[in-house]
Image (cartoon, rainbow, N blue to C red):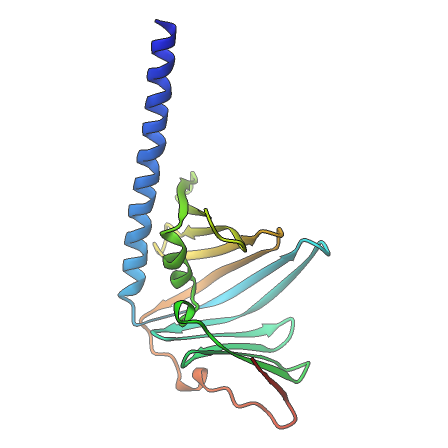
Length: 207
């Protein structure tokens, strides 16, 4: 009898875990669909980079802009930097170093925004979710076959029902966290955001 009870308890626990995973994946599907229906979104960002090997942390502040096929991060602190994704290429400009790097993106990373990353990894990850007492929901994605990414976390604000924090950890233990504040949905983005005129004398490296 004890063995039967143990097996029944184990099966119920396994069923509960499987059901929770299916529910989390369905919720994540709804979130991706919700973002896919947007024409644009923008926010103030606070970014934290943790570098495992040197045990150092870097904090950055700036603005995040997205509309279909384009993404731009314009950092103001600790130094002025721009990351612009447009027309299948990504350009990173560092004002203090007077250097810019331009790279052609692979087809599966053309948009390079957090939701596109989630959509890309969702099909090949173990997915779970948790909720805090104050209403924040966090989704955890653990890729099963990725040589670089160890885990991705997406936190949903109960106030806006949109992503307010996105983070990932690589296999070396390095971590990047983006916090989104002052979110604007489907608001017009100035055309100047998508223009990056490199000053004279800037060293341009193309890959």
